[in-house]
Structures are given as C-alpha cells and as structure tokens.
Image (cartoon, rainbow, N blue to C red; front, side, top):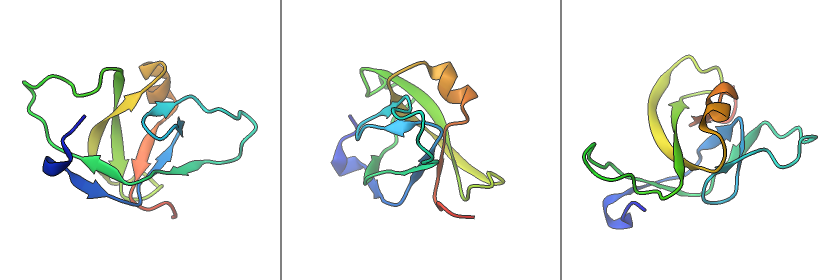
Length: 102
C-alpha cells in the first residue's frame, strides 16, 4: 500500500469497463447490468520510484485517466490493483474518468 502521509486524496473518479470491489478491479458481477460507470470511493494516490517494489501483492493494470468520457484527452495512467486477467481489462477498454458525463 501507498503510505497515506505521502499520498494525495482524490474524490470523484469514475471507472468504466469493469467492476470495483472497494479495493481492486474485478470482473463484472451482473452480466445483465446496464451500469456503465462505477463511481469510485475516495482514492489515495502516490508516487513511487521505478526502482521500488510494486506496493500491491496482487496483479495491477496500467489504467488510463481521461478528462471526459469521450476519451479525447488522456491525462496520465495509474497502476490499479486487479483480480482477473490483465489482458481482458485492456481489451475491455478499462479506463478512469474525472468527469462521469459528456
């Protein structure tokens, strides 16, 4: 985990392309669901050196953050904890958004 004292608190991120169990990305639970976006709880983000060990014991997926749903402007990417196949997240177009509307 990233130490909270060296992290920033981010609110209002939206996730598209998979579900979230409160700690990590997971496969969509309800295949019949029409829920396209998941509003994430407060997130703590922090920088780690490329030489540092990955802070998550499970897998991670490099996930892009876009300003809006139109995906025209990518802001950066984050390594998010993930359960499941990393390739399926990439193929499924998993992404984060600062704004959950067009």
